[in-house]
Image 1 (tube, rainbow, N blue to C red):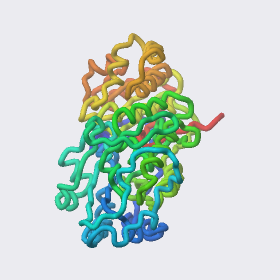
Image 2: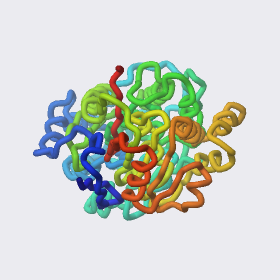
Image 3: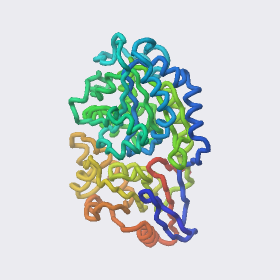
Image 4: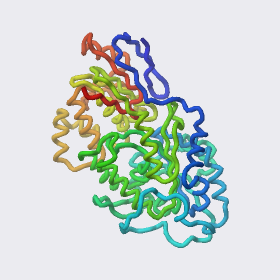
Length: 459
């Protein structure tokens, strides 16, 4: 039996006896027959509609997009709404019909919390202002080619001087915007702080400690300062911060409160997508942030949760492009694949990692400095929290459960230093795992492990 395993933007073949295959699973998606129609219906059927939102949208306006580590089809959205944005931009002097109370809101409710209010004030008679920002969170800024990929060639060229990438460590670009009830001091990109109208475009998939991506994550951590993200992600070490969990999840609840504080005075329209099998628009919801996010979560739950009758001795866990960009992002595939692994099993991680370890090397630094996975967890209880600690402790727990083997372009010596066994090909790793686990072992192939969540049914 031949199985084509994703590798970068292509695939590599694996030949295996069909009797040794436990399953070959991907997200439960299909190719959308009319992705543009699905988006247009979402924009036309929301309350208010997207065009009604624009009719009452005050300037300045900010359009927020995911960075290149997410397969969000932002360019497809931009092709559909670019004309509407152009008409809004050319609509004359701001203030004529710009009432932030009319039309869409953040879906976040009221908040009495104090803090500066850079976007408020009487409308001024001036030309309308439009900006686009890539919500990088703590990732690196987008390259020129990535901006073309994200926004599409026409928008990237026409609005080149209006497109920016968030830099979480650039203090001059950040504005203080209040504090959450958990004590998170909110530093946010000045473009967001000063915007009076916001369009947020993102996609929703399971997330290993925030519950789900999408929704509030465009604003926080997408446009937050480094210390704000660090404080929020510290809660990933606490109970409740897990995949598929929103209620009682301290990471999600802090992000949600932060979004409410910053968006409370803004005219906000949310476009939430769930991807089809080609990473195009499979489902779309528009309107208020919370409502559109919850609709997308319900669809994502059906598409990306994979129910299994049993765990497996060998799991091939693939980080598909572009979530294979570096080891930091590959962590999602490791954590997801481990959910389907028997104790003492072999987890084969497949991720090209063309950008190496990623900007945050805490994961590698902590694992490489320890003599064992147990020591990583022991050291974590005594050390000050830093971004990436949750990745290191999560992988240490996986290593307590079984072996991690990896097929990547990363240094073999470096992988051995963090207790990963490197292989040069998926075929070699699968053959070696079958030999190690014996004739009764079966292999489960998870071909989109970064966005899917295997769930073993209770016996």
